[in-house]
Image (cartoon, rainbow, N blue to C red; front, top):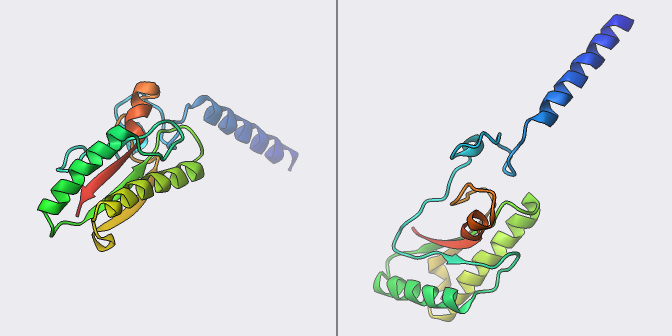
Length: 155
C-alpha cells in the first residue's frame, strides 16, 4: 500500500509540474504563438456597420465613437427592415467575469446611443462576449486597443 501511495504522489507531482510549465493564454487555450490560440474564435470583421473602440476599463463613448454610430444609425434608417445586435468586447486583461460585465456595459452604451437617435428598441439587441472573441490575438497594447470595442452585427 505504501508503494502505491508513493507512486501516486510522484505521478501527481509530475503532472502538476508539467501543467505549471505550459503557458496558457488568458482565454484558456494553449499559447502556441500561432494565430489562433486554443481554437479561440476570432471576431468577424466587416459588415455595413462600423465598430467603435473604447478606452481601457471604460464603457464611455468618445466623440469619435459617437460620430461612427451616427453613420451606423443612418445606415439603419436606410435599411429599416434590418435589425442589429450590439456585441460588447474586451481585451484579455481582467477576469472573465469582469470582462463579461464590461462587455455588457459597452454594448448597452451603444444600444442606448442608437435608441437616443431614434432606432426603436425592437430593432436592437445586445450581447457581451467579454474577452472571448478577440479581433487581434496579440498580447500588447496594439492588440488590446483593437479588442476593446463594440461590434454592431446586422441580423
